Image (cartoon, rainbow, N blue to C red; front, side, top):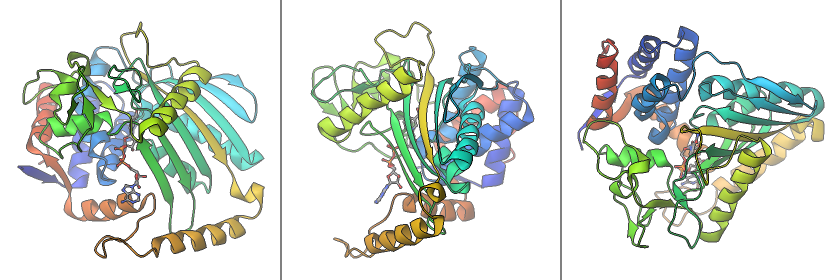
Length: 359
Ligand code: NAD
């Protein structure tokens, strides 16, 4: 496959310039660019710069708003409900997380319930924000207004891709478990539709129950270069882990959709746009015992798991977060690999906004 390797500084600058040209201020544009390129660096191309054309489209359509500050709707001290007011997720989610971190550092624990956030991207980023402050965090996320995933045993779309993330701050070994409860994230279908990594067997299901790996199942007909619209397809993504993943996805709707009051995936999307809801739990290990004891016990256990004799000697057992750390090192050194179609979609958006690519 034709791949371009774009150096990280050039890619970040291009994405920043695109959002500045689209009307965001420099700080917000930098946040969006750093987050999207950061997702590519972690190897999650599905939540990286492939999203640029769609984010710009949403901004221009008024589906996401620039320069918003999350409002605190209810302040319970140990918990807070925040309204992201349809601001960029990369702006309002870090604000909610910063509040949760501050309160957990003071009191040992805090729960934040964020609603109406624009697409927050790679959820592991927020777990990493908490890890940097020495905290454990757990995040349940839903996508209000987006139905993409069939529940276990069904062929109709009912859930969104509903990610869950857990971060644990071990010194020198940050642990980040972060995945969609769908068999693949929607962005992975997006990447596959642009010539990127193919989907695993059984990732999608047609309306008649046939399993599929063809992105057209989700997007219907589309041009080689240009946006993809999931509402044009007749099939669905499947939930991971049979009834267990499907149940976890359902609970994301309860926690991130209903408890935050941001709304669920369906049945009707009256607002014509999507928003992430995120219920986050922040825990301070030092308030539960001593940070040193927690870290020592955690590191000892993590080490023991890493040392498990692998089924394939060439593939050592990895811990959550290991693959991302390895890819980050490689891509920082060698640039971000982008399929030709993804790169030309980004350049087409840039050109339309009068932005020249530095590469
Ligand atoms: P994935 O299937 O690649 O799983 C990633 C997780 O599995 C990571 O924690 C990783 O460290 C761990 N992992 C991977 N390989 C491993 C191995 N060999 N051994 C041990 N652990 C391993 O992730 P995904 O489901 O494709 O999700 C991709 C991204 O999409 C996530 O960052 C998620 O937050 C994001 N997402 C966001 C939204 C949203 O609405 N904002 C929706 C869905 C997904």
